[in-house]
Amino acid sequence: MSDFILAHEPTIRLSGFVGIFAAMALWEFLSPRRAPSFPRWRRWPSNLAIVALNTVLLRILLPGFALGIAIAAERNGWGLFNAIALSAWVKFVLAVILLDLAIYLQHVMFHAVPVLWRFHRMHHSDLDFDVTTGSRFHTGEIILSAGYKLALVSVLGVPAASFVVFEVALNATSMFNHSNVRLPDGLDRVLRLVLVTPDMHRVHHSVLREETNSNFGFNLSCWDRLLGTYSAQPSAGHVAMTIGLDVFREPDQLRLDRMLVQPFVGAAGRYPIGARDRL
Image 1 (cartoon, helix red, strand yellow):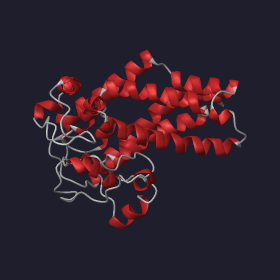
Image 2 (image 1 turned 90 degrees about the vertical axis):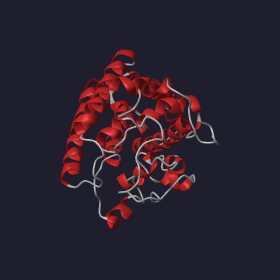
Image 3 (image 1 turned 60 degrees about the horizontal axis):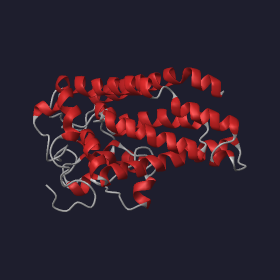
Image 4 (image 1 turned 120 degrees about the horizontal axis):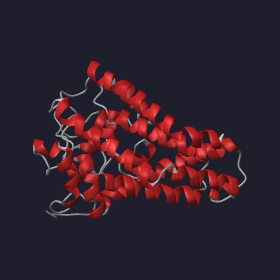
């Protein structure tokens, strides 16, 4: 099974991305939650270009490295999960849950440490909120996140199947919960008891600092509730709320070249957790 996963991992990832992206884009077209501030042709080329750039660079720099470590750990008994006697299914489920918690904590750190926020704020500088925002991350953040995942896989001895399932799920739920789709209020209330919904995560993309620093989860909604970072609704409402940051609001900041240099422009600002009146 591990050999099969390693051999087909790029296909599994690509199929998941294309399938979920197409489904969410169609849903956004048929039932949008908000009227877009900018036409897709102004935003989508750059947002999709950064996805392509990140994918190519990771394939060059770390070609299947995390998955390879997971498989090596399974075969050689490395890491926490290979040192304890649990059934394969229990290990699989626990690994996915712990990886999700770890990504929540990573997300908090990218908001708390000013130098990390500089890279992460490109994700927040999108002036609209839709399926492409879910994959719009600065290359520097993607590389740092890849290193973090390598450390997690090494220490935990995450089963290879769990790692691939989690990565595909993380990508899929990121596109889902960033989508500009309308869910019935009742369905949203039920879903967000377990999963991060678009209305829940949209709060995180508010221009208001206290709302930006809330709702950090990507998959499971429980981490925000348990760790005190949950915000139910934006103060201005989902339709009237302003998306983005108080910087990089000019339309030309939606261009790929401007997006790539944003971490190196200006001060970290007032958004990092713990910042007071930093400008």
